Each structure stands twice: as structure tokens, then as C-alpha cells.
Amino acid sequence: MAVTYITAEGLQKMKDELRYLEGVERPRVIAAIAEARDKGDLSENAEYDAAKEEQGHLESKIAMLKAKIMDARILDTSTIKTDEVQILTKVRVRNKKNGAEKTYQLVTEGEANIKEGKIAVTTPIAKGLMGKKVGETAEVQVPAGKMEFEILEISL
Image (cartoon, rainbow, N blue to C red; front, side):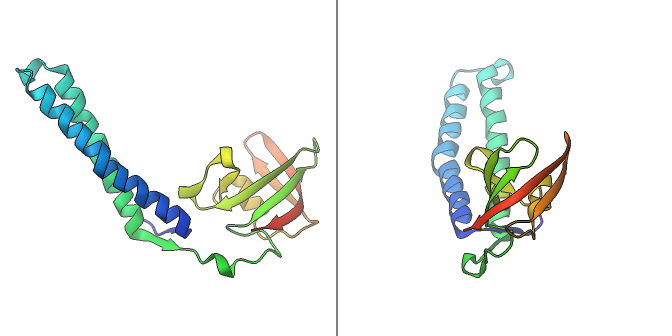
């Protein structure tokens, strides 16, 4: 698995999720398997099959999360400058075509959440904004065509 760069906050969220999966979800699934097993013939027991399938998905998710945590490298937010757009900065932009303003925070893939305005640095918009300064225009090629964003503000 590749190295994942993440903030300390993002790493803590992953650790919290892992604790939840191992401490709450795993025992729940194990109990569901035991309950289904107690109902008799396993060859025709749909509940048992469903619980075993859920266990497989859960264990896979736990293993993936553990691997991400092991390979994570924490980004030091104290070294982030706001003179240009870079990972972890928030950037307020204006769409030059329709005048709409939007604020994005450029984050790692594991922390991306469009509802919170957090976009992964690997997205076309983030790639187009990277390295730009206030007052500059970023031309971004997206599936719907070319977009132009004026950089209005950069902050943490």
C-alpha cells in the first residue's frame, strides 16, 4: 500500500473508526453468526450466510484501515504557508463564468468530504489550484469542460 499523508486529526479519525469497528461492530457480527448457527441446519440458513458475508466485509475493512494507519505519514500543519495554494490550505475562489464563490480545503484523499468543502489534492480542481496565489486565475479541465477560478483568499 502507498504512503498516505494525513493530518493528525485525520489519523485520529481513522483510529477512532478502527476502535469502533473492532469494539462494536465485530462483536455484533460474531453474535449474529452465533445466533444464526443456533437455528440449526447451516446449509439452508440464509441468516448465517448473510452474517458470514458481513463478517468478511468487516474484516476486510478492518485490515484496510490498519494498513492505512501503518502507512500514514502525518503532515505538520505548522509548516503550511498561505502565500500560495497547497495541501491543507483553504482557498476561496470565484468561478469566472457564473460569479459563484466557493471555499475549498485541499486535503489528502482519506480526508476528502465534499459536503465539508474538503477536496482531495488529486482531484482536477485541486491540481489546478495548487501553487496559485491570490489574484491569479486557475484554469481547470474537468469532465464538463474548462473552468476558470479566480483565487480570492488563501488561509488555514
